Image (cartoon, rainbow, N blue to C red):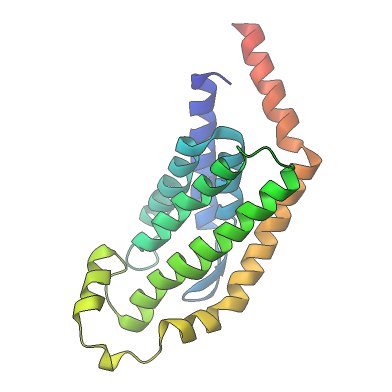
Length: 197
């Protein structure tokens, strides 16, 4: 895949990530069904680490600028970047594609959904500090007596929504991977570009 084609695909997937952000279905203030995971995973699987991180982070940041829902949550932005990076790294392993997907989804679930996203929302909605590294510093230096709900209790309340979103996105990525829809499309497009040159 040549650099120009990869750059064009990165831009297209970033735009799709922005659209996916806009079409997020909120369930509660800190829980939603979002297909940004699918887009970031596709970028990671087909384009590699740098484009995937770009698609995840830039798509989230621009999506927030265009469709803000409160303060920008930096933990969510880092999580979106990692969502693309995880499959980009795992798909380099010499194992079955289905195992690559399962491992990527498991790492994403623990690192991004359960930990980073929940931490960001907990800081924002429960601790009431800025969902950023500065807010995290404020948390460590503040009096913890006024915090109404622990991180773990908050995580327990979010877990069913997180699992639902994870399963829905995992099934979509699995279908895309198993049917090889994008394999055929990307291979044909890359061949067409090569033949025109």
